[in-house]
Length: 490
Image (cartoon, rainbow, N blue to C red):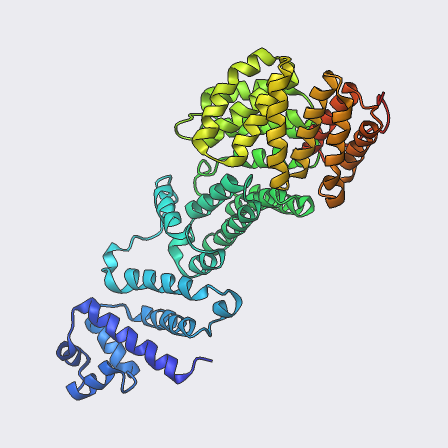
């Protein structure tokens, strides 16, 4: 229950806002409310509760719709309660006060300070709504997840198909680097779809596809599959006002990534090809990168390189340097896997330039690792050894067990080519921290243990090292891949 003190303060705030709307001083307020000036002075200073009849007369005198008076009072009471740390939202979400403040300020702007004829009614969805959604996201993006939720719960302008779509786009953008945030944004889009278009299952389906994608990014494949199944049911039930507003290629793209994670590679390729057949805009390059990753999971660098080559002319390094770096880096990796080291060397300069432009330390270390791979492939063993030693140290410092293991094996290959089996044994002993931490999955550990046992006995061969490297690279994309024991170990 709302206590009398909160109710009285909300009534006084409503009176002051209405006076602001009508440009009234105390004398003007007394006139339109037909109340004695002495009583108005008490209301103004908060020394006496504002009667309901007085509020109604002030609303009438300032041309404020009477039917909106109760919603205004409700939101002002919420504001007062949140400020005192007593609202439901504040109990559940620590940052509730700021979110309710933003919601109330927006309501005050819309309902009090602006003439009613400037409030545009919600009409048929149109592509121009995306511009408003982008502006709304700029206002919301710096808030916490709790604050975002409270704002969209309170402010109707955030409950549109276009803002739902915008949240989904933002979710996709961060999925590869911040999966938990991607899931949170997708769930917020789902909430927007239910609030603003509860009768439109197609919009809800759209949001749920992105929830599935968020779960996939978080490696919760069971939850991803359940969300995707429900999304498909909703997506096919109805159409949003204009069936062209939501990109029908996106659900197929999301499904392709999910099937890849589930190791259903043929189905993943079918879905990504279907998505590409429907997408001829800005998302095509990103879809081709997904296709490349499916081929990488299959151990098919040729297929991956073809997809990357098709994506290359669609990516503008000036507009999206990060995407350009990913593309150029992966293309050089594929060329190395195909042992086309001269071509790989020719592409290193652009990869280095883009990495320096981004300025991320780990990006620069991975480029140094790639430079070492190219040097090893060209027979420049001293250059390769120097690069691999530098990168190993960095990866161990950052606790990147999997990458440390891979670059250690690359270094071991160089040393074995030079007949330095004793140094390979030392490298194997330095890898023991990986086994102690158990930070990689069982099959990868089995492969590494096999190599380390052989190295400690100075029986490791370049063939074994290459086989373990190939397995570890593929198992990053396919954690359920099995390592075939001792076969070919000699």
